[in-house]
Image (cartoon, rainbow, N blue to C red):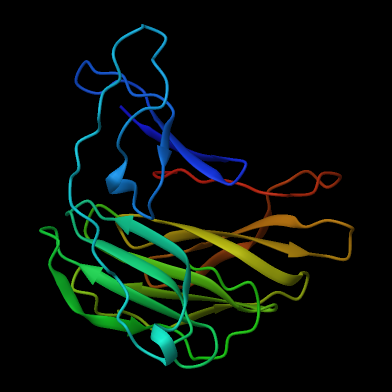
Amino acid sequence: SFLIVFSVSVITFSQVYKKDGLFYKNIPVTKDSLLLLQKQSEPTSTNEEPKELPVIKQDFMVNEIAGVGGSDQSALSIAKSGTGGYCAAWIDTRNGGKQIYAQFYSADGTKIGDNKPISAPNLNWNNSPFVAANDNGDFIITFAETYYNISIYRFNSSGEQFGSQINISSSSFSDLGYPSVILNNDRSFIIFYTGNSGSPGNDLIARRFNTSGLQTGNEIVINDPDKNVSSFGLTQNV
């Protein structure tokens, strides 16, 4: 079974295709948690009665109440590793400007430490973070720190950083942004991001890094030269 989440006219829906013999379809998401997906809004094509998805865990707060008025959080990204632990990262303004924070959890849902600041404060660009994980419990967080620099941080299952911060810049592209990453089980990874080489639109670029966090090879432009990128998605185990 699998889950699709999509938006239609600012209303977010999810769709699940068959789980344990039950069908779910077009479920409106009315809260900020996919764990609270409830009733389907229309019958399935098999004319079965509407079913309810089970609530796995009630809503819980990830961020801490900090800063003026509790500050503001946005651009949440979350990933679950193969060992069951998970990590959430988001933009936080508790210190005045935009800053990337993260929170790690163990497989049983226990919070590991406090909210962890990942970046320096006062970021000024499209800084939405992206989190990925591998089967061994490792995590990787990436975001555009500025329009010419993408930052990468790696963590183990205990939320401890391993290796140094990795910075990506480019002599061929400007306006770097929208990074996404896939983390392999040996801790090598491939990162995707957009950049502009002076053409009207953006290109989709990829770079590979080995287990030590060192780049292997040059930048790879994914899209055709006469086609520009508007959005893209990723899959694991490539």
